[in-house]
Image 1 (cartoon, rainbow, N blue to C red):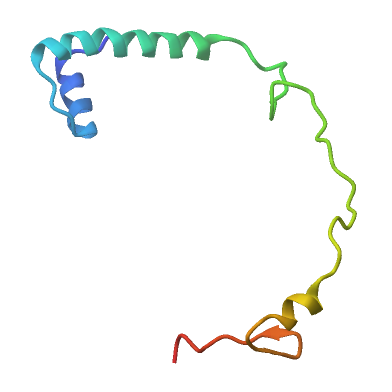
Image 2 (tube, rainbow, N blue to C red; image 1 turned 180 degrees about the horizontal axis):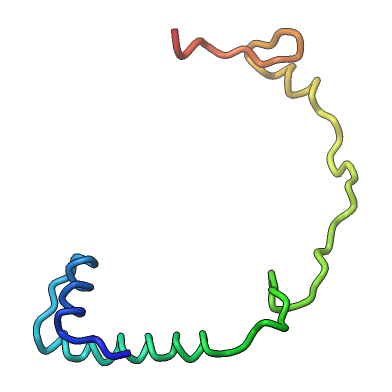
Length: 95
């Protein structure tokens, strides 16, 4: 697919970038090459392929769901400034 200078000007306007005429010629060639590559990829028959979520077939390793720290709730609440019924009391922020 070939892009002309008006296409490059429209794309530059949409991207909100200033492009000089010299840069427009270079960008036209680069963007045309990208679009040609996309057309090549679209031409490949992928009807017999199943979609992949990840290119590698891997199983996620899961760790054992086990308690790793002792329960220190009583200790932490004993050093807190204010607690009530197992909850930490804080000053009201929004009235």
